[in-house]
Image 1 (cartoon, rainbow, N blue to C red):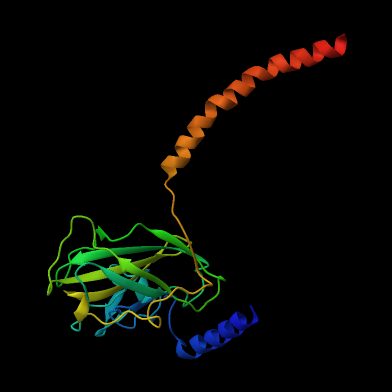
Image 2 (cartoon, rainbow, N blue to C red):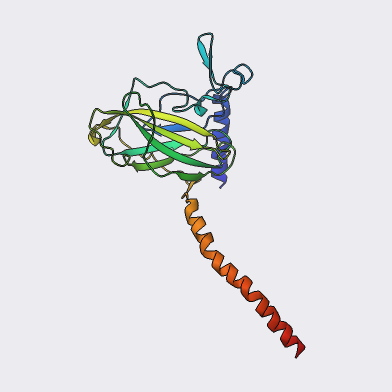
Length: 244
């Protein structure tokens, strides 16, 4: 525990030095990479009239931070694509760069083509992560085999974009992307313990649908009603016993 706290303190100090003037942006895709550094905040909410992004004097401003911008955190399509296996492969990320992610939901989607019109193909079911603190924390999570979306087939040379979304606990979404070119596994950068691992301080939880909870609630209702129906008879029996 002490070693983790020492590591955490050093990591937070490094983040503070590197990120002076940076934003409330929180996700870095470690493998297979990402479009570019979008850990930026600039401009003011007043100057953009509350918009998440605005263009003025030849540049964009992001008063809330770039990573809040759909679909890829304010970053344009990359000209340098990363090769990724045609049958699916690894994705790893660092979710805790800034405060506010003691818990978060993670989504991964695929957009097809050189400039995808949307990112509407889910690659995995969403899942929840729990970090060690609500403050910035170090650590990586890795999914060693993220499959292609259902009913999607690709060939070597096809282009696409992997979108990673981190849903903060207050409901806002952070977006990050990596532009890929599908390739045979032997032509893809190696996955190692350095670029794809799961830190022990970050845990995973499943996401349950409300339908199951609703069904359970419905199944309990008859039992509760039966108990209510029996109570008057029980009370009558007790009163009768006391009067004997």
